[in-house]
Length: 209
Image (cartoon, one colour):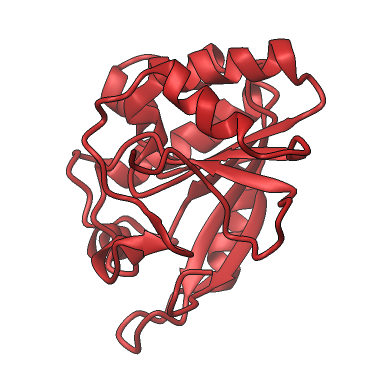
């Protein structure tokens, strides 16, 4: 069985586990770990989306004691499996209301579905970490290599909509992944604040963790 739920901690009982919903993505970021390796801490990440909610639950329940946080994050964009993501979030809310639920996302969801996806997850997500990646559209396109039009504006709109939905929102960038891109960190932080989000600068780590 391929990996749907995994940990990046060496501890036997990690406080955070991650849910690898899909390998599909609307970005092809130049710094993405999936371009370099097939696993995360020994967990095989590639799969064909041919699974059920019960499969996710079974893998999640293998982690005892219960983790304190669940993060939708893997080798793809979690919101591309929006309905499955919603089902598992509802399962967690019902059975483990104390668990914090977060998503790491590229921020394209509302543009893909042509609706306010953040509102659909109001009360289901505690936090959203959204990849801003740059302070301008041209550099964003170079770094993220999006497969949708006007992707940078879509990301900024999604940051705002998550904040408006009462989801604690972070806008993130990655720095240090090459010498070509000198990302303006201060401008990115300013944009994040203007959109109502906290700012995170994630320094690139070769292995991704």
